[in-house]
Image (cartoon, chains in turn green, yellow):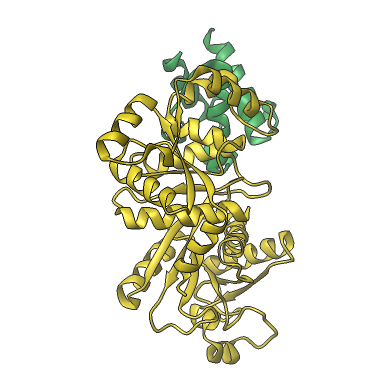
Length: 79
Length: 332
């Protein structure tokens, strides 16, 4: 899977887990300031990545990602 | 009869199936055996069955007290995976769940989710973070609840409150800096927890450094907002505030400071702290200066009971927490 495809997939997953419109998200969207989600939403996102991409990301690693782009980097390392 | 005696009696009347994913641990196996042998629970040991059986024999326990579940039993594993993925609102799919279930903690929680066990008891080898993550992934949060949290039950010598020496307090262990919505959910979960465990009619006070507007500022605004959310979400519960601690639990202070009707002021049996800085410090003050025993933390907010015991806990404390968990599971 190329980078662009992975970015698009993860944007869709973030949109689903955080209940936001995917068109409002980019690689620069921050979890803390833009999405302001509770940690339970991050658990859902990590599970979704595991379900769809077969990549196990530790919750603390995902929670340490400032932006969606950082999370894509982490997933790419795992694939 | 002490509070724990009462809880032990309730457990014995209806022993629940408790899954132990850290069964090989010596203290955990002893606590599981003794609570099972004494009739408080029906212990299920989850893990490598060959190794578990060897350890049971080595340690001289009667194997018939336990049900043993082997996580390598593919037939049983596939059966509970099929049941799990058919449940509504689960987050893990078949393949990801199967991989997670190589870990006994996830295996046991999946058994719990599908009704093969009533509660999972862990935390002696796994960290609190491991248990919370597995709980959120497999058991999930109760509908309408936004955060996991905890309460503790304090038995304070000399305290003459509305439940005698007992007072439930939360959150002192899990949710660090709750938003107003999360704080409301902590209060709601705490009321449900004490109702289920102790049969109390909860009178829950949201405490901070102000009583009904005596102080102002953003720290108080959060507590007021949380109170409004809690009252709107659960009008059936007596949750009130904002109160200072003395106005919440001392009738004479409440009479002076709370100039309106309140079912809670002066007679609260549940206190909700505004954040974890307050909660953690407050519990330590109660323990150090009040010489109190504090039971818990009891995790709350999950779809069913998830437990995390302290990694340094002695067997006696583990047994108490197992029995508390079993009684909470029967109240669900």
